[in-house]
Length: 319
Image 1 (cartoon, rainbow, N blue to C red):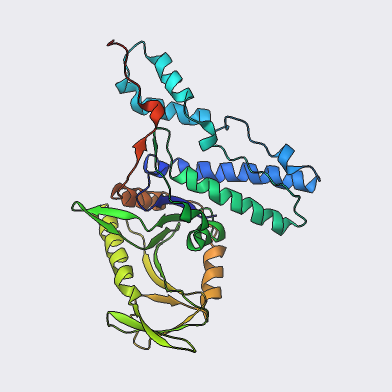
Image 2: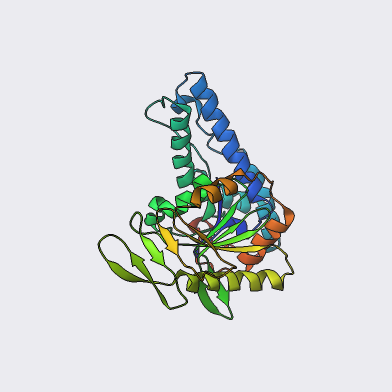
C-alpha cells in the first residue's frame, strides 16, 4: 500500500519527521493485518478479535519526540500542563480499529475490506498531527485515482498527490509525484471513456477520438513538464541524485503520438499491464536517499491547517 505523504496543501505528519513515519505506518498496517488474518483463519469474529486499544502502542512513543520539540516553550513547573493538554488530543484520530459486520468468505475478500478501511484511516493519518489538523474534502474518500496509488503499490512508495509548492512566494499545484526507493515518477492521468484514442502533438490541445465524436483535450504534457521541472529543481538544490521519470497514464485508452518526446513514457492500454506489474514487483526497502528526496520536496510544499482547539490554552500565570 503506497504511503500518502502529502495531499494538496493539507498538513502532513511526514513533514515533521520523514525518517520516522514511513516505517511506523508499515508497522501499524502489518500489526493490524496480522490480527485480521489470524482471527479470520481461526474462524473468530473479527469485530471481537481485531479491536485496537484506546491508545495505540505507538501513541506513547509519539509524545516523547513531540514534547522534546516544544520543551523550550514550557518553563519549569509546567509538566503537568503538558500532560493535561496532550490528554485532550482525541486518540481515536490516530488509532486504526477496523471491524466488519459480516465475515468474509475468502482471503481476497478479507484483503479488500481491510484495504478499504485502511484507506480511510490513512487519509486521516496523513492529514493530521498532534497539534494541527486540516479539514479534508470528503471527495478524497472516493477518489479512485488516489485509491489506485495507495492500494495497489508497495508500502515503500511515497505519494505526493497534487501537492502545492511555494516557489518564490507563488503557489504552484502540480501532478502526482511517486517516490520509489530507486527513482521519482511524475505522473499525469489521461483517462476518460473506455477505449478512447488520444492523438498527441506539440500543440496546446490534443485530439480525443471515440466511435461517436472527436474533441479537443488539453495537452497533458504541459502540466507533466511543469511537475518535472519543479521536482528536478528542488532535488538539484539539495544535491539529491535520483532518476526522474515522466509518464502519461491512461489505463483504459490508447495514445497515438508518432513523434512522441523520448523522455516521456506513454502508458496506455497496450503496455499498461507490463508497466504496472514491473512497478508492483519492486521489493527494495525504503532508502535514505529516497527519504531525503521526500523531505526536500515537503520543505517546499504549502500547508494550510489550524491548531487543534485543545492547544489553545491561555496561561494562568507567568512562571
